Image (cartoon, one colour):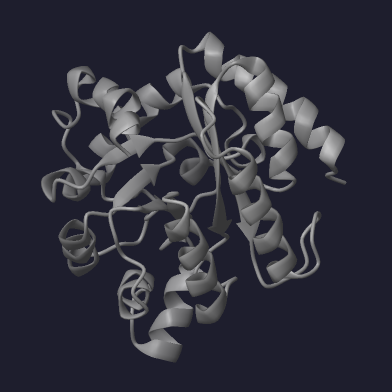
Length: 253
């Protein structure tokens, strides 16, 4: 049901919700991103428009290489813009071939753009990599040369200590979407260990259909409650540690 007009209109609404919460900068990953970029520009927000790339047919492109070309045109259009930039964003480790992931990486790298994808988010993703490759998704990304400071890995719910060590080694960053993850029952990412590994982490809301809201303030109390429970430690993540994740943490990512 999604089309270009709906992306444009809903992005304007989304930007308003961000601005009401004091959010000045966003990293979006969706479809028809030229319309998202146009809306963000008109709303005066600072944003990165990430065109989703995946092997299967999407609502905007049937062929992933058409989507890559579209993303490249978008990056060229906004080069030098004071607030808006763009990238191509592979959907995930199981929805893109190694060749497609590398092509997206090469394009983003050529423009100095961030590289983002869903990583270690799903149970079936973890099982697929275990059975087919005897690797984790993070180990797989390293094996094809895609771990770097330009990587913003979304979710990382099921990363282990070795994964985090690799991400820290390569300077990767993580978007932690606690509300979305809890709504979907996918699990609680090991935020305590991410922080201990000095990996830059910023709070995200994920899409409104995934987490019901783009209100970043709504995520703040969830952080404390979820991670206290997951770690059986009521002293974990007091407010003075949660707030920076939503502010300077997101900026660093």
